[in-house]
Structures are given as structure tokens and as C-alpha cells.
Length: 331
Ligand code: 8YV
Image (cartoon, rainbow, N blue to C red; front, side):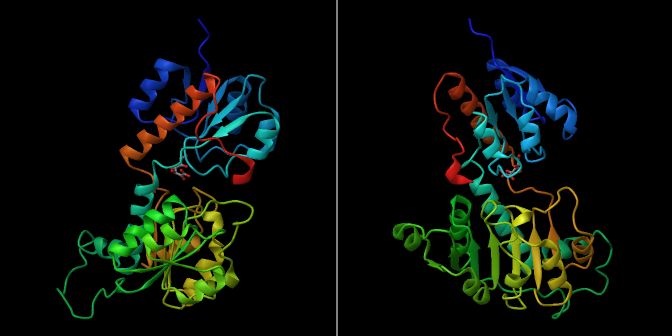
């Protein structure tokens, strides 16, 4: 029988996923569950038939140039592939796959959670009782937030997650607006009751909440620049469950400090796990809610993502096209 492919997995995955992988492949796991050091990542690329990286592995063109002759597939555990130089991989004949579709609902839920947390000051309020600060009792003017019903939500990137967010937003009585490279098909647009803005600038000036739901690509880097963030209403809320790089994080912090933008809920950052000290300070003041990249962090999503990785590897090894190939047109 054929030799099992050597699959190097850079992080621990849910038990069920690791078990299934061991049945199918010759698996080498990083037992530490800490990000691999650059040297170890380079060694993995040299030896593996298949590499399964995560968002914490920076696989640049230099690393890809050192890949061994056996490396034919990078099966990413996750949707975003901006941490991989996919063009360099494709040039070397290395296929790259991701895990779309299975984390859509959970990520949209977390986006709603951030919108509600920021607008209604949930995390700020949740600290008061354990910190023994609820001393004077209830007051009509204490802990006031903002109503979200009837407000305008602007979704930047109307893909799977953007559409799942739009559904939830409608149920909360939000008016849905969106900007996307392409207008979505009319049937989807009308089912979501969503208003398309070809001009991101014009949309930003009109919405009360803006949510980033697009991938990070060269075209979306700092899409929400200082100039664009200044177009927002001063009471606007910014949320991001996509990639930190899509927002100029320092500009956002400065504008919140100066009262030009009201608040933010962020699950992703430009230099993870480092977070701008200004944002951390704003979080201590209750003006922003910061989460450590938890959008897809459910048992269900992470298990399904692992299943997708397995299907992509298996299909590829059986000599077929894996379902979730990254094509140059997606970059
Ligand atoms: C993961 C994500 O936590 O899928 C993505 O793009 O950011 C998250 O689902 C992470 O990427 C896993 O590698």
C-alpha cells in the first residue's frame, strides 16, 4: 500500500480532529500548542508532504522558497489566508486550501455580540458587581448605552459572514447597508433587505454602526483609513471580526480618544497577539471591547474546520481537486 502522507500540524486541534487525522495520515503535531518558532516552521515546510498551519504561522515567500520537494499542499486551518504568501506557493506548484462556510454563523454571532456589548456596555457592566462597585443601587441615569433598534448598520464585505450578520441584524431591527466589490445578486439583496453602496465613503457617512467582514488583501489593507474613519458620525460604533489590518488601528484609537468616533468592538488586531496600548487603555476606560480573536471559537466551528482540512487533504491525496482551493482570483 501507499505510504501515508506526512502531515505536519502546527497547533493542537480538537481531539476528534486529531484522532481522525491519525487514522488517515502520518501526523506530526506540535505538542506544545504554542506558535512554532520560525526555525521549526521552516523545518516543517522542508519535511512535510502537507502542512496544516493556522493564523499564527507567518508563511512568507522566504519560507516558501525553503519548502522541501515533497510539500504539495498547505491546508490552512481557518478561512483567512493572509498569513500565507499564496502567490509564492502557487508559483511553486503548492496548492493552498482554507475552511470556508463552517465558521460563518459563529463569526456572525460574535459580531452581533460585539455590537450589543459596545452599544449596551455589557462588558463594562459585567465588571461592576464582581468588582464590588455596585454600592448606591439603581439610578435612572447610570450605565446608559445606545439603542440599536432602528439604527443603520453598514457591512463592509457582503460574503458569507456579512450575509449571516445581515440576517441577524434585521431580526434586531437594524437597517442593513453594505459595501462590496460587487453588488450581490438581487434576490439575496432583497431577501436581506440590504441597501448597496458603491461608494464606501458615502455609506460610512450615513451609518451608526460599521462592521468589517471582508478578507485582508492588498486591496483592503487599511481600507478604513484615518480619512475614512473621520467620515463616520461621532456617535458611530466600529466592529471588526475579520482582520485587524483592514482598519488603521492607531487612527481608530486616536479618533476614539478625541471623541470623533464613539466606540469600537474588536476581535482582531494588526499585530496579534500585541494590541496597541492606546486601545488597551480605552478598553480599561470602557470605550472599546477587545476580544482575543474568538470569532470562530466554538467546539462546533473548530471541529468542522478540522473536518474541512481533512477533506481537503484526502481529496488532494486521492488525486482530485480539493474543494476549498485558493485561486489566484481570490487574492
Ligand atoms: C481562526 C480565522 O481562529 O478563519 C479565520 O480566518 O481567523 C479564525 O477562524 C484562525 O484563522 C484559525 O487559524
